[in-house]
Image (cartoon, rainbow, N blue to C red; front, side, top):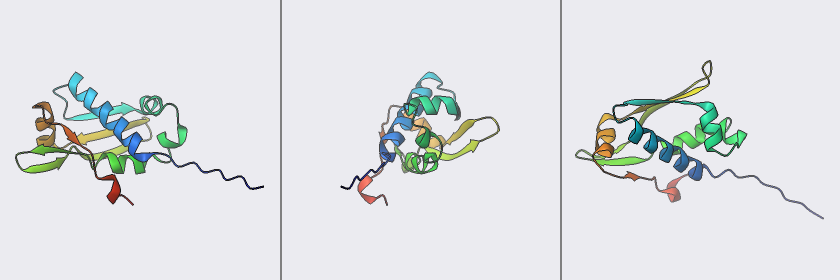
Length: 118
């Protein structure tokens, strides 16, 4: 008898959840040029999947920072930079100004091509 157990986190689903969370944040804070999220909020966003909110978070953020917004200069990544502040238990996200403005002007966020991901 063989029992196979695998746990493959769905990085693309979690990246989509973060992007929607960011989109809601921008709607509520239209003057924001960056965002700071408490890691407890990210943990709750991932339905308390501790692995995704800790160990796998960098992989998830690598996908999330590939989301783009159409601008006059072509598609630009919405997230220009992100970092984890361990001391304050927070996620810091800086937005591309041009992509952010296009998003505020009503352009939609475009997901990365999942078939090209490794």
